Length: 292
Image 1 (cartoon, rainbow, N blue to C red):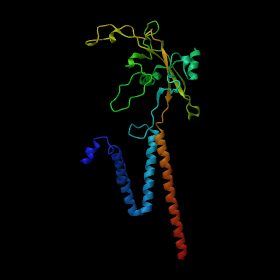
Image 2 (cartoon, rainbow, N blue to C red):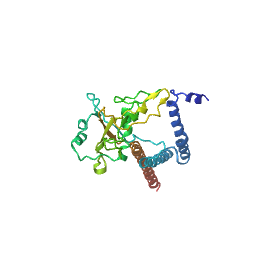
Image 3 (spheres, rainbow, N blue to C red):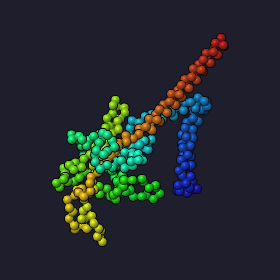
Image 4 (cartoon, one colour):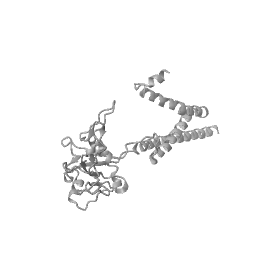
């Protein structure tokens, strides 16, 4: 009862001591019970070697499954691949937002400004860029008990206030795919020999949404009786570009480290049992020769 009451508050008991006790209980109950049964039949030393080899062998199989599958279970995982804004030096803290494409701090992206044949990315490839844009430009709502996120570029209260795919072109005609007035480019990312990846960058043209009359508040809330104007970019505010980099993540790195570690321990346990058996054979052969 005291343990339940103590676990209700986040203290040194929970999760620190409680987590340690959980791991120790699992080791004693599962691994310890197996070792106890084996030691009664094989002896303390050989029973420990067999139990250790069985445990490391199971962990090799389990870590292999973690490595080759993307199970939704609570298995060791690293960082998830995602787009994020580029890192800026202290002397240029706003390098991820540039007024024109030629001002981009990445040479491959700046070269696109003088390349009229540069192709924009397809609409389906763009979907992964929007979360990184919103995380940088939209002010995050503070959550009690958590540190305030560092957002040096936050300038909007809602994600709808910034457009990355304009719904109309420069003439006010609705776009088919939303790429006529705002462009997105992706450069790099090739993988020579299918082992290493070159950095992959993205440049996204952004604009501020044209304010709508229906966006204005009146005592009852938003006025639904006002007809909205043609949606699009605010012509009074110039467009700007955001430079992003793709983080390939490390989602398979933890299971790979588990696999290498337990594979080494498993091979070591097999070698230890092999050397023990060879020593017993030599001792039995010596005893047989001495008896004759």
